[in-house]
Image 1 (cartoon, rainbow, N blue to C red):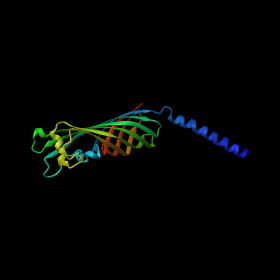
Image 2: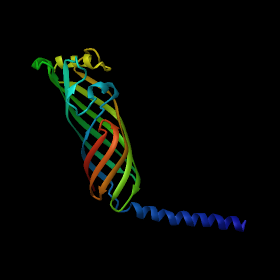
Image 3: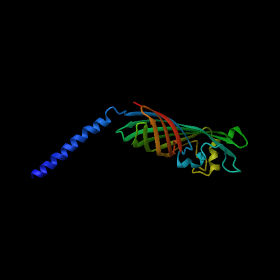
Length: 211
């Protein structure tokens, strides 16, 4: 009985000693983070796979295709709350513009696709160093695609994608982004380099501010 009592008190003492260390580790840690970034080779949704590939190349899908596409650029804005130094949650909003031009430069057949994605995100900080952090993340949400005019919607019929028919100028579909590896260099103000797949692009470069 005495031995069991000693063991119990020993375990309680260990737990009590570990608890203040966890508190000290979190104390003074910046809980909030805002990030702006841009990426290339964005995949706004599997439903728009043929719309977006190749993402930043200017050219025709096929030799006999009547349309060409150029992604003007993508911009992401995110807010993240750090629950602990390891686990974070937040939301990411990504905006991308894709210009579609008729092969024969017929103005009525040209226009813009605008993609807007909103995705809740979870981030796991894998390792912390004096110079920064290494992390991975996953996000799941939806993308809204809006065509600037009716004629540009017929571009879908030439891509052979999910929307290979005229179904209106606006679509809302599921979307996702997975960051396979991210590197943040800096403390309260940091540069971010990410490799992933989805709405934010295969290669993503950004700036974040923690407070």
